Amino acid sequence: MNHTEGGLVIFSANSHPSSREISKRIGERLGVELGKVQVYQEDNRETRVQIQESVRGKDVFIIQTASKDVNTTIMELLITVYACRTSCARSITGVVPYFPYSKQCKMRKRGSIVSKLLASMMCKAGLTHLITMDLHQKEIQGFFNIPVDNLRASPFLLQYIQEEIPDYRNAVIVAKSPASAKRAQSFAERLRLGIAVIHGEAQDAESDLVDGRHSPPTVKIPLLIPKEKPPITVVGDVGGRIAIIVDDIIDDVDSFVAAAQTLKKHGAYKIFVMATHGILSSDAPKLIEESAIDKVVVTNTIPHEHQKLQCVKIQTVDISLILSEAIRRIYNGESMSYLFRHIGLED
Image (cartoon, rainbow, N blue to C red; front, side):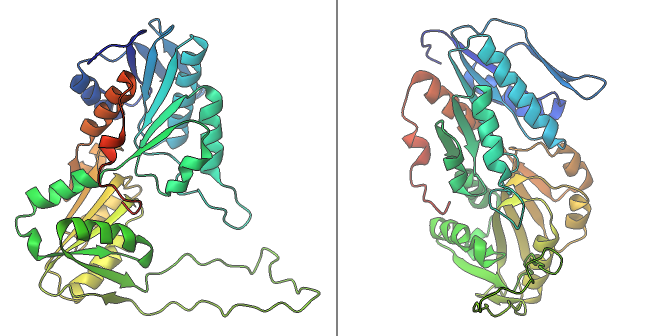
């Protein structure tokens, strides 16, 4: 590492031991020891953070991964950022591989855009820069009034396909719904493979029976024809081939399990699921273990060691390399464009 005026300090803002693993990997790659900070929960569940070294005039990077208790994760990050700000750090960069609440980035009925609220809180706490990875919707970057580097995990997942699946040339990239077709197309073009799309996946129903929407208007308004879910079909040939389902997040695995069953019926003989963020909540490991899925490959943006103990099909790809390189470039004032070479909007 080169050194600019002030110095580099890297903190792990997470109190969960398994969540600190990626921070240690990044520190080792940079040749920097993690800064001394105490992050813990009081008996009444209040989060307490104590910075145990001087950060005055230094460039601080705070690494925070999402644990099972996501709200505690957020408070740990906000309080650590604010503690560094009040200790006169020169700059404070948050390294948040998985941005919490990213699925709540659109208005639903009378809900709210929670990711916008979280972005405002992080900026207000004192964050001056954010490094994240594969935002659920890239428009989330616009919720911040600070620079945001949205890195991509696709190069690591593509490398896994090429190195760990010997007969990947006989594979087809699958989008489990039309909404993820662009991502599947990007993978297929880079691997020079075919693409298939599963059509007819169950969509979230928007019931308007009890929220007042059925109250008759005073004027005649043309109404849209109600949506009708079509039967599940596979657009593309998967017979006798390896099916690789790609997505950005795998949390509730019901749709992936249903997609795997459909692909099996259409003749796929191996089924892989590849995603950046492996939340794998609730009974996801058990459902995967009992399903037609052969392997689930996710990155270590989110700790999932406990899930791996329950399901041998889950495998992990390490992305600490690109995070450490992003930190090095930002600290040394170098261009970030190299990390986005050949990266399209659909990746």
